Structure formats: structure tokens, C-alpha cells
Length: 212
Image (cartoon, rainbow, N blue to C red; front, side, top):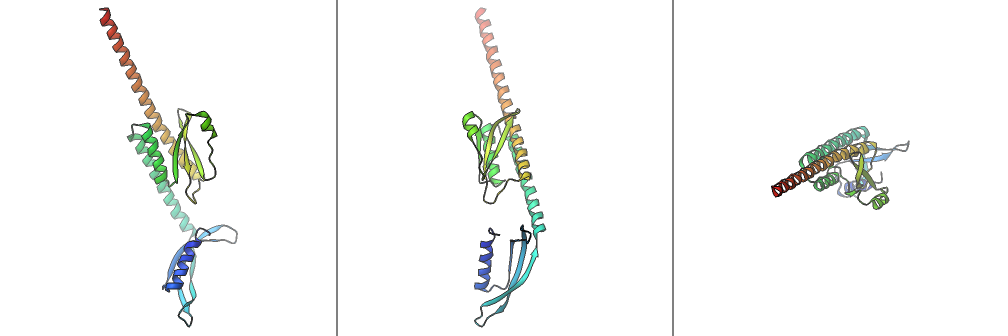
């Protein structure tokens, strides 16, 4: 595989130059049907020429594609659980909407390993509609009370893709974030209503005092 070629060449050159007793590496090769699959390559130098230079490297190549897929699936599940658990904790802990959104973007960069995550609020309708997500980015919409209030622009890391499973994870993440934003906005609205009520009561008391 093109992405594995540099490591393959590096290890092979090291074996030839340093005459290491053995080597082990994992890389992808192309199946005769056209798809790529993972193999494990274990071997050693078994024959030298008259100048004590390696002439033959022998070994065993084993198909580890299913094992590799199982390991990647477990890693992906752990990543998903960590990402959703962290955003749930942030939703409960944070008291400011801006801090919650900033933490969400940091989680997408650190836990989900996106190259960059930037929140774009839906404040300027024209600019918002003109925003597009080319091939190396993914737009994650955030909803509150049934309406889209913004989106997180995700820049993909090299080799990263957003398949159906990843889209479902990101949708769950966005849902948790939307719930958190809704909770904070409801609290803010309630606090404002209470403040308005106190101001109204205070005005009535002053009016009664003046009448008396």
C-alpha cells in the first residue's frame, strides 16, 4: 500500500545494512481481486554472499486482516465511548455556552483526532448559507429546539474518513451538545425572567410607597 511503502523500505534497508537477525512488520498488500488487506511479515537473512552481504531474506507472510479489523473495531468503540462520555460530562459541568462549545471542539480534535474543529454560529444567514464543506472537511450541524443554530466544521486528518458509522457517532455527539446548549439557554431565559419579575415587583413597591 502506498502509505505503508516508506516503513517497508525503511525496515528492509535496515535489515540489509545492519544485518539484523530478524524483522517483523505489518503492511497492506493488494489482493488479486483488487482490494487491500493486512499481512504480518516475519523473516530473517538466511543466505549471505562472499562479501558477507545479505543475499536472501526468508520468512513467513500471514494474513492478519481480520485480526487487524477486530483490533480497529475495538479501538473505534473505545474512542466512541470516550467521546460521548466526555461530552456528557461537559454538558453537566459547564455553565457557559461558549465554554461548552469550546470544550466540544477540543474533544473532537483530541479524542476524535480531527485536525481541526471550528464552530460556526448561525448568526449571519448569508455567510452561513455560503459555507461549504469540501472533500477534506465535514460539516456537523448543531440543533436546539428543532432549529439548526450552527455547525462545527471538521477538518479531516490525513487518511481519515467519515463513513456511516462515524456519521452516526458525530450525530450522537451533536445531539448531546444541542441538549447542553438548550439547558444553558433555558437556564439563562429563566434567570432573565426572574430578574424581570424582581424588577417589576420593585417598581410596584416604589409606586405604592410614592402613593402612600
